[in-house]
Length: 118
Image (cartoon, rainbow, N blue to C red; front, side, top):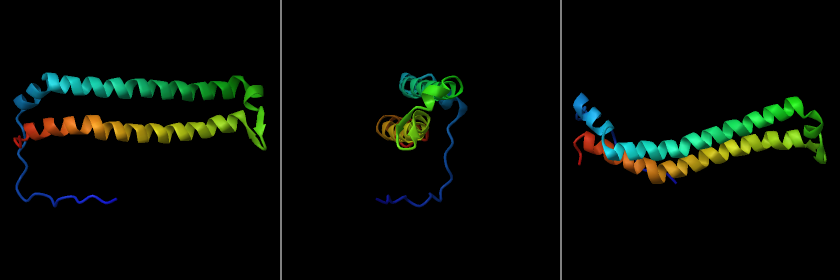
């Protein structure tokens, strides 16, 4: 699925003043956008780092457990290591969906008002 991007505008971009930036930063709408972004990104980042550190700690201190064969040549360490890659891609996919649905439209509305489009 390809999306059509309009060509760049020939007119110079109107930059908002410093006062506008401060006003937007102090607005309730921007504060809510920032809170919802942080409410999504920070816990997810913390959970992934904890999951990664658990894998590292198990690799260092629970060698017998990590060496337990599950099937064929796959052991617990290999399975959890591959799960690290899987969770990385799942988090990226989930973030892209949430950002497109929740964060991007609200950020675009704020941006267009700042630039004088709305």
